[in-house]
Image (cartoon, rainbow, N blue to C red; front, top):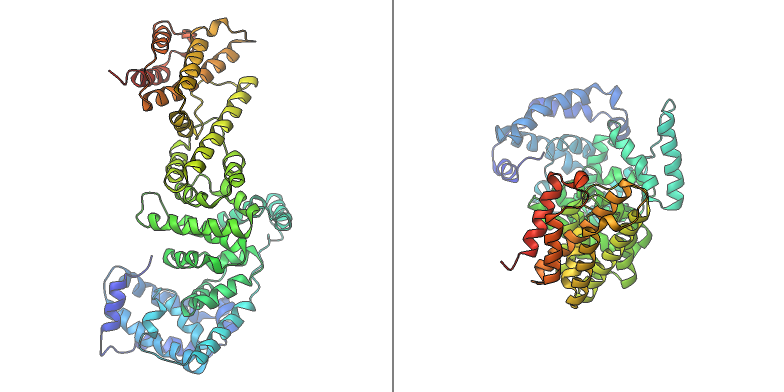
Length: 490
């Protein structure tokens, strides 16, 4: 949580504010320590504990809108430390400034708004910050007494790094993040990273491009606010490392829910990142899709980005990259993808997507038909609406009528079809019934009227086959929906 901008501006506008004496005294004490002691030897520095305790109450009051005069006094107290760094290159003063501001998250631009200094000076300060960051070892490993499971994940992740495998690497990453502090192993250093970003975005991107380890990318980006991540996304053509782009995408997706207003802008940023990932490394791009596939914002962004894919890659996304199974748990999410694709792709691309989805659905249908798996519910998958749209877009209505009547006949005379056992018969019934359900929506969308289909459907309703197995509440719900689709003209 951050302090509201209006409160920050109000605090900066106050005049005649005095230094916070208690804080100033503590910061002067901290000035006796060098950079390494401040950043990397916190356990042996009791002054840092007192600093955290003193700032916590001020931060809480500032966030709630109370006592902004105290916030102003903090600003007046720490501003000289920033000045000492900017004007004189005092790196210890910078670290102290960053330490205090890490509790308030005040944008650097407010501190620098009345300060002018030559470009050469700014370049020198950027170099100083980069030098500190480049000297830090951020490699992560499982502790010596870690479990077999943790060590195995680490071993697989190391192998995944050689193979450029998203799953192998991020199985380990997610396990680390679930295990407590995750990659937050130095709070003040994280804020020093963000200071570099605020000081000069171009220099920060240069630093990102020179990182080598996955844990470094995560450490650099994990605490960035949404607005900063969006700025980086908009400049993603300057990012040369596909893993940085992947992690930036992951961090942004953590910030959004589909019903949030920022998600509208966020999905555009995600679409930009996906396009850059596609251009940088198609292999990682196609691995990113199954990794993020359940996220609604990602699906909308993917639909927007797919307009830039080749025909081959459009097919690859729909046929291989996006997961499919017999359940419809992601039906709503995947429908958002469908809507986004329809809005952003060409007619030819859209038809190719629908056809590929239909072929994949049919392949899964055929697999279930031949397998010994038991099915006692609709076989929609998450691509149910793709199938409805495929048949709704079919120009030759005779094909739909022919398939519809054939499916109805198979349902009406299901008892005439040879099967090994009752389970296989029930599975086949629901497969046929699922196809009927989807076709009925296309029948309604195209405003079709077919007398033979209507007669067959009446027969199906009047004398349900396998009634002792399938005439349950869900079945009648689906049957009524099909009936409404068939009776659209009434």
